Image 1 (cartoon, one colour):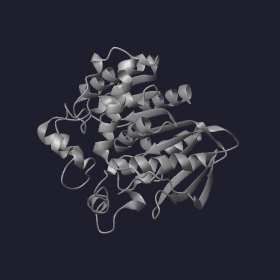
Image 2: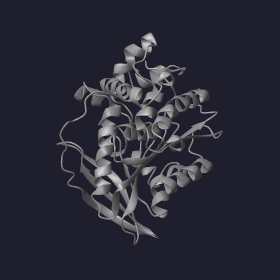
Image 3: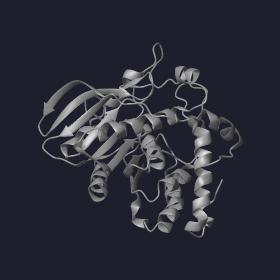
Amino acid sequence: MQDLSKLKGLSEWLPVREKIEAAVRDVIGELDSERVELQMKTLDEMSFPGYVRRRVNYFVDEWERVSAWLFVPDGRDEVPGILCCHQAVAYGKDEPAGVRGDATLAIARRYAEMGYVTIAPDSITCGERQSHGLPALDTKSFYKDNPKRSVLAKMLQDHTYALDAMCDLKRVDPARLGVIGHGLGGTNALMLAAFEQRVQCCVSSCGFTRFQDDKNPERWAGEDGFVQLPKLRESVAKKDYPFDWEHLLALIAPTPHLVVSATNDEVLSNPKSCEKAVKSAKTMYKFLSASDALVQYTHSGGHALTPQALEQADDWFERWL
């Protein structure tokens, strides 16, 4: 595993970056090389003060349509678009849309009210994509059909189509796209920013703890339930990892990224781990003359996206989008 602190300049970082990206791609597994047409359809539409909410679906591969909530603010053209990734909840997209769940996490509705176009899709195993006969967030059926890729790879690829769906609207400025998420959504936001150049701004909340520091690294590569990275199983057993989260953060550089963490996160229970990763990755931001584009905000509100953290995210999008 590459120690980023030992790199002395941009010329050393570029070849290391290629190796890190290759290592991550090897663990997450295959991504489809060919894109499919969205063929987006609007299933219903409802007007609210200041915006319209649509329920849409679109293709993410040759066979599957994904359902999403799409919010379009009134009367503005060429506005930024924000992809809102949901946490690990059974009802998926409905929470960021404010349809049900934690009202604090109704981020797609929040940013639509602030004038952004937003989209909140269902991730695989959640919402309308829950496998028949299995509980939400059970990946057994997915891996039966996709033995060479991880759930995180599938989510990453599906979220690129969510960006396409926003860009399909003439109202959206395709050069001003952001992503935000909490928990699993924070993980997905980070992954998308690392591999998708269209993302110009990222906010990830409570999305990771370093593998090396994790008291329960099996969370990423267990045998049953929600298995995110099965290929990491051997590394977990040996405690020898091909990459860690600081490497993913470094791949995002120089894209502006606000990392939200908690000192008392009961899920990812090593509060200093996130700080260590951010400090390490910040070296790459410095090499790219973007030191102020990677910031960590820490709160004491537990595994949550607190109102104060949301205000930080508001300012972050206002600044960078």
